[in-house]
Length: 495
Image (cartoon, rainbow, N blue to C red; front, top):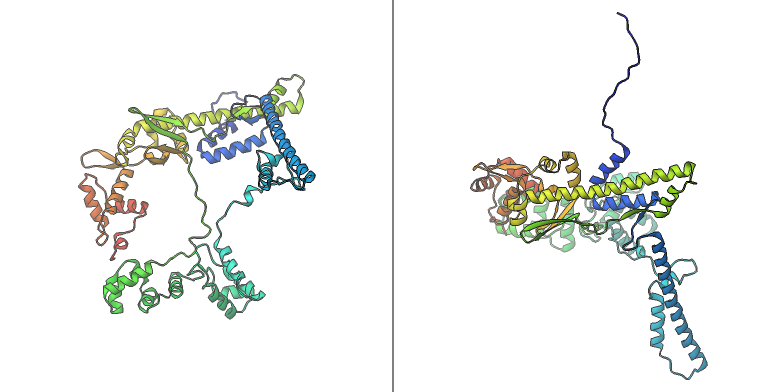
C-alpha cells in the first residue's frame, strides 16, 4: 500500500488563553489590597495610565490647580517672614520696648508648621525639616531584641557576650531553646560549661520561662522565678503533666497521696503560667479588613452596594493619546505607545468587569440567603458554587475566584463571600440545613454546658437528634475541631 503525502487545508476551533484573558482572570482572584498594589505597579510601568484625582478632569486643570496652590502657599510664607522681620527690626531699634516673646515664639512655630511650609523651608541636605513618618512609627520589639537589651545591662566580658548572643540566637519565637548546650558549644568552639552557665543566666531574663528546652523546664523556671515552689506543684510538673493535660486529677491525687482539693489548688497555680514565653513579643500588627461590598436594608429589601472607596480611578493620559493621533509619530515609538494604549484600555475594562462580577455574585448570594440576613446564622441555607454560577451564567471556577478573599459587610458582621457556601446536613423531617448552622448549634451547646460535666461528642449527637439533625459522632468531632473546641476530657474544670 503506497502512502500519499499531500498538504491538507482545514479549519479547527481552539480555545486559547490570551495574555489579556489571563490578566482578567488574575484580577478576579486578587484581594482588594492586592488589586491596589497591582494597579500601582501598572501606573508606574504604563505611561498612558494615570489616576484620576477627584473632580480634576484633565492634565491641564490639574497643573493649573497645583500652580495656584503653590502660589497661595508662597504668599502665606512670605507674609510670615515679613511679620517676623518687622518684629526683629522693632526689637533692634528700641531695646527698651517690651517684646511679647510668647507671640514671637508662636509666629515662629506657625511658620515652621504652617500648611506646606516644609515644601519651602529646606535643610542643608535638601530634605524636609519635618521628620520622616517611617522613622517615628512604632514597631513591636522582637524577643531576640528584648533579650539582647538585657544582655547589654549586665557586666559581661566580650567572650560572655558572644556566648550569650549565640544562645539567644538559638531561641525561637516561642521562647524555647532549639539546640542543646553541647551542639552550640561544638558549633562555635566554646566551652560547654561556659555555655551552660550563660544559658542559666539567660533563663533568668524576662520573660519568665525563656530559654527552656521543653514545656516542663519552662514551667519549672516560672515557678522558680515566681517563688511558687512548694514541693507538690513541682512534682506535678515533673511527673504528671499528661494527667494534668487530661484533667485526670484523681490519678494525680492517688500517685502523690494527697486530696483532690490539693491537686486542684496546685493545678490552678500551674494554669496561671505561660506555656509560650515569647507570645507577647514580635506580634504582627492587626490586619484590618476592608469590605468589597456593603449590604444594608432599605424598607423590606436588602440592597447591595460596591465599596469603591480607596480603589484607584484610572483613565488614559490625554497627552499620550494626542501623540497617538499625531500622524508624524512613526516607527518604534508609535508601536510602543499603541501597545501601552491597548494594555491600559484592557486593564480598565478588566477592573470594571471584576467589579461588575463581584456585584452580581453578591446580589445572588443575598437573594438565596435572605433568611440569614433576616433571622441569623441558624437560618443559613446550604449552597454550592454551582447554584450561583447558574444564576449568573458563568463557570463555577469564575465564581470561586470572585468569592476568594472578598468580604461583605452586613448588619450581622463582616463575612468572606466563601462563608455563604456550605454543605448540606440532612434532617429527619426530610429538610436540610447548612453545615455552618450546625456548627453554630454545637458552639451554643458547649457554651451553656456544665463545666464540671462537659458534653461528650456522643451526647452532642443525641441533643442534635432532638432538633431533627442527624450526624455521626465523628462528624461532630470534626466540626468541634474546626471550631477549636477541646474534647470533653480537656474542657472539664474542677474549680
